[in-house]
Image (cartoon, rainbow over all chains, first blue to last red; front, side):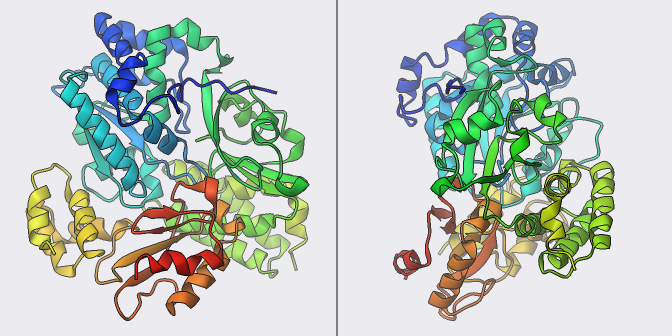
Length: 407
Length: 148
């Protein structure tokens, strides 16, 4: 069984989150100092070579992302931290920010130095005002200490919109607009916040950065899966014994997560399914539990690593009822900008309501399968593209559950 | 109570600060008074339609009156399977209103929410965005008493 390895949460429980002195005494801000003694390109290459990939769900190489902004000339560039973790079952960014806010600020400052940005924003979900208070105190302390140099960080609080986790919708929201995703290209790296080159990285991604600079790309690359190195913070929910968070190397398997660290199913019941990556993730049956959790291995089985949310369901779970609930979530959270998502999420919910109510037919299932396939290809952003995944994967792995409810 | 015009003034120099202003108004009023939309539009130099569009887009923003203490029940999948429905029933019974309504004395509003990021202790509710976890119907009266 895989064992916990704390990189992102290296200071968890060891320092007072509200004391910058604690952070500095634990080696904090040495990496920023080191980065500033390196060339900007050198810092970006170090991050790129470490293989660090986005921890928010898209899994894009972080250094490569930084490179786009670095090489785009502009009078102003921005570093934006995506702290809008809205994927149901996810609370890792909250744990990181509540327990070690300075490591996020240091990661942002390193990114700022590397790409040539003097301004950073943390877009915090509206559900976390109490986390924003902690991070604001950390910013104030960092400013008072002068550790951030000329790099300024501002928090913006969201107001309850799942779609704002999509990076261009998030940018729209910081600009004070409805959180509707933009057409891409241009990508934010080239033209993002107020049209300027902008790196948007997740909290967990940025919290990895100081350690990578401190210990080097080769060290980081040697941990976990070759194609998705490092660790991942998982947050467990549902019918699992240990409903908590932990950080594992990325070569751990789903079984390690659910039955190892997770401690298995509550009450000695049997495992039914696990959904990983949040409510947009695929449902995984017992036969696939030995799949490694890294991004690419998960993609191969039609699932996702996503945010690292792990939602465990026991044998008594009515999966079709859960899927109906999830389709309602997407109908509610669709921003309405593109037709396949606006209409698709609504119709998908309608059909699933009918099926869950015992009034569905095989034709309804076939229709929603077709609709799901269209949505995954035709929707503008990740929300609509991923929305049908829970339905489509349960149809693939748990078809009998649907059949049992059909007329 | 601070006037919404003064609150808007505090934020109008912030680029894109209209959402910050709305959040601040709600902290004071628990909702956005309808008249605040036109004032915000002028302050942030956008059309009334856009100012309204922003306020109506975000599920935590509410145009027009609602109860002072906003209770939100998470109904995302992890809370759903942990018995959120029973908590909803208990809240409706305790307050004598249905989901989406406010109490006649203006003290409470009852709303649905999606995930609030406290999934280690499902089912979860928040009151004025403060989370309360591991809920059972029996725990509801004591929690509400804090706000009565």
